[in-house]
Amino acid sequence: MKFAIALFSPPHSPASRRALRFTEAVLAAGHEVVRLFFYQDGVHSASANIVAPQDETDTAREWQALVAAHQLDGVVCIAAALRRGVLNAEEAARYSREATNLAGGWTLSGLGQLHEAAQLADRLVCFGGD
Amino acid sequence: MAKSMLIISRRAPGSGPSAREALDIALAGGAFDLPLAMLFMDDGIYQLTPDQAPHHIQQKDLSANLQALPLFGVEDLFACAYSLQERGLDTSHLALPAQPLDDEALRALIARHDLVVTL
Image (cartoon, rainbow over all chains, first blue to last red; front, side, top):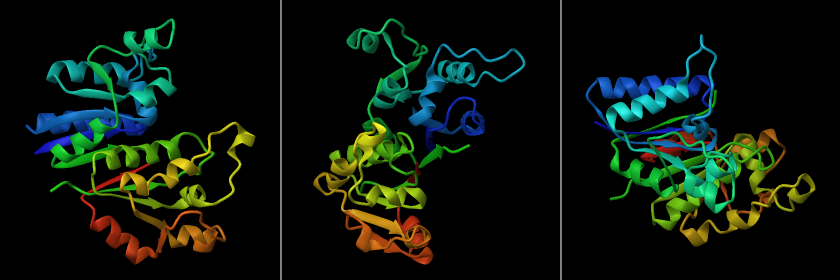
């Protein structure tokens, strides 16, 4: 089965961990993840600048590793990301900002990518709230 | 045939970007001619009330974006009747023609859409 997975909650939320474990389980069961789409505070999980305490789960780092290991199509909503200061080099240059922090493996793009993924997948599973 | 999406917007317009970001999903989908509906419930109901003055809290007015929904092909607007009642409102208080739905009608609305996104 084809899954599109959307995350709306910040990296320290239980919803973010559930999304991560769900995605791992989907892949482990041999299903396909057509796209990960991070929206709202979910965009923070694509930041390379999160430093989790050593004895806590680093969900942002785990997401990045998962995307790399499975060559997932990891898309971060550009409007939501700009609003929250998650920038790649191109956007930092466009808006004259000093730092970039979008982790490797992620792409900034528009909400059309959420709709496309929802249309392509058999299931859209959204993770929001706490 | 394209899958239909119901967007459930539950946050007040002044409570952060959620209202705006739910609306943006609808407008983006409308631009692709996708079959979409929006349901306002809980404090999301307040997005539909007229004469808001969000500039007093340095927020942007969402009314113009909401009014644009039909232009983007999003004409199915619904309001949770219980949420209205809880807040002492009825459809005469709303700036947009959202159809009020009781709990049973809400269940049917959710069931008949292929995709449901709640913000």
